[in-house]
Image (cartoon, rainbow, N blue to C red):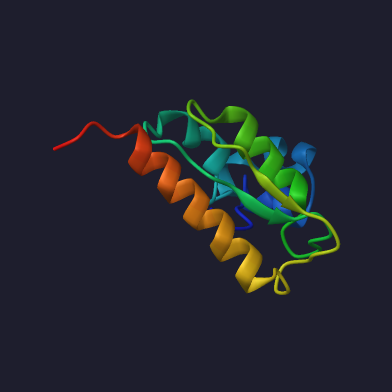
Length: 103
């Protein structure tokens, strides 16, 4: 997941607002990620001002099978270096393949 939302309200406002406005928040991903059975990689720019990095950190903490996250310093929402993110995704895919039983 790249720059994921833990909640629409949390991305725009705060954790408090997401509690008060719970019925109106259509992106309550923090309630869903713990049901993901597969290993998950999260990448997020630390300086993201569109979807704050705290959203990615919250989701990562809730995962059952988290892969080592890639918190990218000095990156925002739309300026994540393509080569670095693709290389890290390739490392993640290689780890998944290595952990899979042979067919």
